[in-house]
Length: 317
Ligand code: GH3
Ligand code: MG
Ligand code: MG
Ligand code: MG
Image (tube, rainbow, N blue to C red; front, side):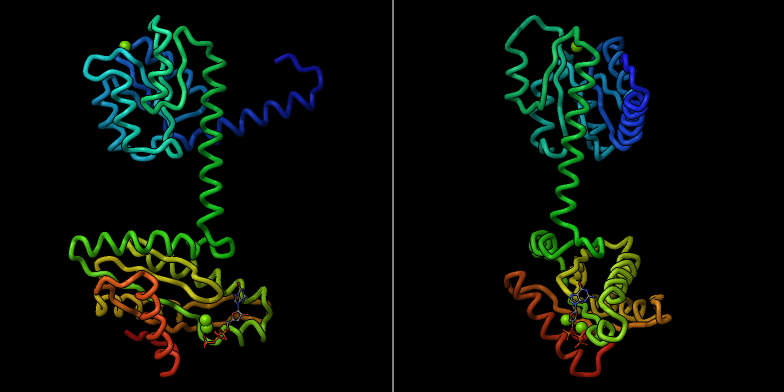
């Protein structure tokens, strides 16, 4: 860069450093049977700030992808001993969508149709060797930016803004999938609705903002309680939260939810007026009988109603 304006120069530096730091979150896999070709790419990617993995063959690449999880970008050669770049691309694409994993084909072949074939096999991009380093870097940047934007959009679409939990949309789209998996394998599964007791009173006494703080507190405590389990949590709306518990029959779910109820009852939220405690009521229902996901939750909601009727701060199933 030749930049006369110092402020502009500083902006360019800051942008580059930010990108370098952001790139550290991304894993890139380089697949090439030729050491020199591979290392050239590795050096370039390391300078861009990425975590870089290498494979000599397609088979090795697939092994690494299966082990590593969350590889965001694959750069692959065409001519390789065990499987060629198309086959590798096709296999990877059958496992990972373009929204999650980008594939860039690279080859020194003289065949001008190679790029189209790569793209048809599922590659996101292609460059011929010898490549212009800066162009390849720019293409990689564009792909990484696109992946970041997709992540942000997903987060906006599926996360509850206030609590950071999965939102209703996510809970109702993922819930039926998890239930289906359990039923398919003859495993138990239960759902629950958690409702904060007398939340309106809390809002009326301390204000809506304090109410929001309490909701965030409840969500955080639920998340901590459910960590290291495979349960799915979500905010269904207002002061109601959904729980989906794979591999738990209603008895096990009752125990799990009662532990949660106790955990929430022990917490204190610091408000301007001082510390407040809170309790929740929970309705639990086991899935089965080929009902719809809505029906399972309705059943849980009916037990929740009974829990409220019978004095609150309790779990019914
Ligand atoms: P119960 O023990 O029977 O559940 O009584 P409750 O007061 O908790 O239930 P009710 O349904 O009467 O009141 C829920 C209140 O939650 C009413 C509504 O204003 C409040 N609310 C809903 N969403 C939000 C939110 O996002 N933030 C805050 N602060 N309040 C909310
Ligand atoms: Mg080769
Ligand atoms: Mg409610
Ligand atoms: Mg309530």
